[in-house]
Length: 64
Image (cartoon, rainbow, N blue to C red; front, side):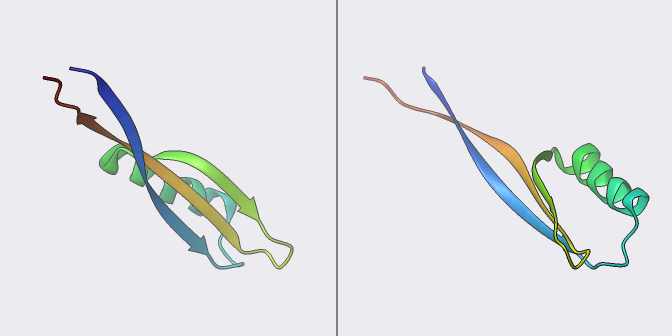
């Protein structure tokens, strides 16, 4: 059966006082325990961090 990979996304918004080390710990926990991987990270001029994580969803397609 062919396999099609789709992704589900999780967006985290961290306030401007969040340190780089704290952001790393948060992303590490999501990666280790939830199977998430980093897709995008944006650091805005006001200091807030916008983090987009993704996780693969594997679905099998029926063939006749």
